[in-house]
Image (cartoon, rainbow, N blue to C red; front, side, top):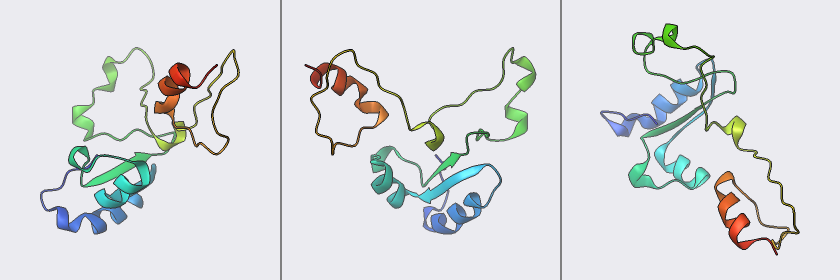
Length: 113
């Protein structure tokens, strides 16, 4: 999430962010909320996603990577939206239902029979 001091410039800033190396997508608040079903009151002025090989941070001085004992790991990017779901019993779901990762609990509790 990117929060701007002047949100009325979000379109131009989103385009600039989208052109940076390692950025998969950067879109203004309204588009992000529709596209990703996000609540507008808890979403930044711009929503940006890194590619699978990059992590978005603030500035190098705020990220002391020397303290890590394993490679830096991020989560939640669009590259991780496909989540395998396995079941040991048949599922009772319409074939047309598009599942998202947060549907796992609903499917586990209500979709198997």
